[in-house]
Length: 529
Image 1 (cartoon, helix red, strand yellow):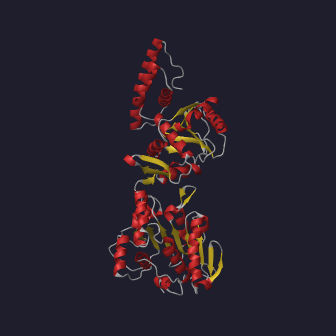
Image 2 (cartoon, rainbow, N blue to C red):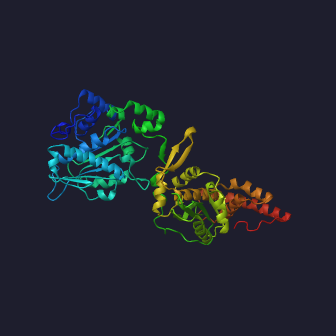
């Protein structure tokens, strides 16, 4: 009995309401013959020119919302695989048909009810239910149907006859996309001859397993993954046209994603996860101690303690052309912001830091509370989106040295770049989760990158300071030049030799300026500290 006969049989699922597109997808997965209408739909939804009947072990369906993904497709495939297929399990082995929904218990319960109600409605299938819990249905043929929220731990070790990822593009844990991790955990368990990996989802952004399958296999003849893409209207013609029109009028971009099954082109990961992984130094301690001869800088994100934002601070230095992040700390709410500022100030003093930079949004509070702790607070001129964007170059060129700090790594990987009106990029977390550690690290990277910029860009500051006195920005620039000019490179490359020549010229300029100051009686104490 094939899957369509199984679904339409009055004694089994007794469902004759499949749309032409839904029926075509199911027939294609199992290599059944297609009608002329279904062949047209196959070409339309796969972008393939030729239909070659064969059973597929892996299939990805990228469909609009309310296209029947859970009810008509996922639950029907699960029951068919559990009841009608002989998986030839070894003695004592229990084949598992597993549906993984979103990380939300509510969504997994909905999918579980679809499966249970279909089994209970059948005079034949209801007799096969041996035992059930809130997440499992054990059948008399020895097969176990499980429906879980996205969680790697529950998947490992199972002998999977079929794994179905429902809304896989939206799986998250603590703000981090986990679709690849969960599916990678499932693959080793697909050990039966006809085991299937089915991914069904409305698309989201151009990243993750669903996007990877679309990019790699959609419209390309291959033997690995059969990929479909179709709109809500195509797969569920009965869905309200009025609701579709209202959704389009409300938000065109969301409409195209949710109902036309288009990936969002204005949404992408801020950083390549591999570049973040490469930046993590596994051979160093979580925090590096203060060292003589290094110039440290710090960036802080002050929070009020009552919302969802954490209080975060990062300390780092430049060393051998690398941006080393020595310390990252954060405190989740609830907390007293004055107490956290005192602790932050104590930490800064251990690294001989007298000035810390932070965003403008803390108002005068940060300014005053740090002053009480003998630390000067300077407001960053650039918003956090600009800091994230500018840090991208440092990550891509591999000059950042990060601690192996899980919260920081997850926050950096969860950042999303969005194209706003006018073509300007903005950066935020994908799910609105905290990003405070990522924020202070990006701010610190920008601050330390400024210290390592082309030296001639700082000369106007030096000249201005010598004539008009030194502002806080000038002092930071002057300290940067002092740090750079005191550096003694070894094993000069051709590029290093050029830099050394520039340093020599700048030292001569600085010497002339000092000479002029002394002649005028304006000696600037602490130069180059």
